[in-house]
Image (cartoon, rainbow, N blue to C red; front, side, top):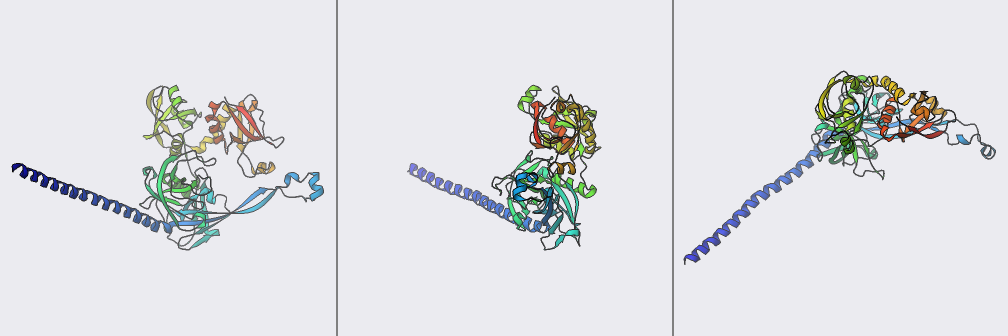
Length: 483
């Protein structure tokens, strides 16, 4: 009898326990399901809010550009065969053509200043801006305030009755991989287009060639297509954290790889362009190299975290402060300096004259070095001296007259003004008047870029120089052995 009572008691206890577990589980699962649903609702409403607040400040930009192109029949003008059968008249060396382009921009203050990409408005002879409310500005009512090809940014201003709706910049340094973002622009001319995605990666560098020398991109999978360039990439608080600039694609359309210039760079450049009409950059005077495991081992380092100083320009701020070739910079103003490109960007954003601190490792010992940042404009004279001292040449930008003479259109190039006979370029046969177009198929635009490029390639011992010889006018490839 006692056993039956005990058995009944245990059975009842089991039933009560199961009911309790079910109630407890239901109490946990239901709020969690409600929380997930709320989060989804919050995301949807957040994107709707960003779109509603962002669209009025995003503009449609149409540009017209006049380009000169080489006459395709010019090489045959003196050919007797063509003269006999085609009776070609004497023709001009160049033809002009109109090119039309589309892009986006974002108003950044109530005075009508608009930030966009340099590749959208650079070289434009006419700019046409359409606001979301239908207002149109063109001709004299649109003014180019300044352009910066090195970051692919530009500022234009619409001159009309304000105030204008505008957006504010967020802090791109605080952006996290995986966070939701919204892109707004005019892809393929379709106005007020909103797409959403996440930040896929940060600090993408070395993606594009000259003249974009400062590269530190945010990568996103928010759909970006031709026409989106210059539009904002926004966080869910409605702040601009990037300026959409480029995609990597094989099809010509969006494939999930979009890139935006971080807002901290865009804000600094736009402020400089509005204030000075140009960007005043800081200058350190070093050539930096990514630290590989092999290099770290050769310098007796236990980590690859840092940027190796491959060369120091004589008389530069770095030289005067005591930074030496072979030093490894591990931090700049307390911020880790793992990527040479990002470190170069950080230095360029530092006002000239400001004293900053670099953390370096030299001969296995860590030390702090204080440097007074110089003005990048002072770099050119120092680089001319270094270029002549190390590589034996003095150069100047190729003129329009020289470009037309050799049929080079507007591509960048450097004319050799002086060559030291017993120097790397002298021994390779270069002479005064020759024009350097590319180093290892990379374009060069100024003495600074040429010196930096040659210095960074010293470990390869020799480079391929694509040049135009002033005697024959032919484009040739020449091997140059580096010191």
